[in-house]
Amino acid sequence: MLTGQTQVVRSHVLFDVGQSINPGIDIAQIEGAFAWGIGYYLHEEPLFDSKGVDRTQGVWEYKPPMASEMPQQLTCELLRDNPYPKGILGSKAVGEPPFMLSYSVLGAIKMAIGSARKDAGAAATFALPQPCTADAVAGACATTTSQMTC
Image (cartoon, rainbow, N blue to C red):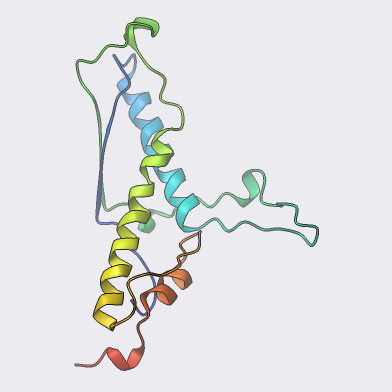
């Protein structure tokens, strides 16, 4: 609450790829998109120039999460026995939809902030800018060091 640092204990992902042609590749794609989303929601700050042009385009501003920022336990499973009749060999593409699943991490952080605010006697509503950096979390928690006494 004081530092705003977050730690994801565990995340479970169940994803429908139809009849997977290569489960190893599908799971790697899902895990990669989930990691990309964590980096996007928690670390990537948009940078605008004086004319309002977004200068964060391209891979140079991509902030992948470090190992310590990933879930300590990440379980990824493919939905079984669900072939997709219109897909090649009954499969579906993975693409980037798992990116949106990582919003669950941001949702959990919002719930934790709400709990901290309640403990601090602060209003239930709060603004949480994206990215949800440690500074943003600490500010949203509305706690002070004087509240951290034994």
